[in-house]
Length: 164
Image (cartoon, rainbow, N blue to C red; front, side):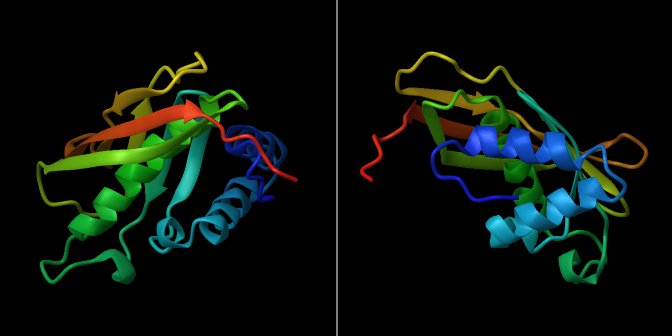
């Protein structure tokens, strides 16, 4: 995965398109994403699906994400919720737009255990004007029960002109 400040959305889409069909490609994409965004990479999540306006991420319970109650730590859930919203949003942004989180809130519905799936759907903005967009990612357990719901406010605005 290459680092491109010129168009994060395009870089994500291009890397996913190249890697996801290959054997081990989704894992390679996820590792590359984790190197590019180290904090998000710290939970060891794997991107399972990515398209403009949609992301699905698998987070397996393992020691590094557990709390003292033998369940997935709240901050790991927040991390994967924000990651799902960011991937869904950024993968759909046109080249001339950028986005950053302004606000994030989470409701923890039940203890999170085992394999978890974070999903986010949205309609990424296309108008080249500054705007705020709210997304609502969810994390579900293997049985389909929602364990956490998020609300993430994104500020979307035109990219700063580059000064080469």
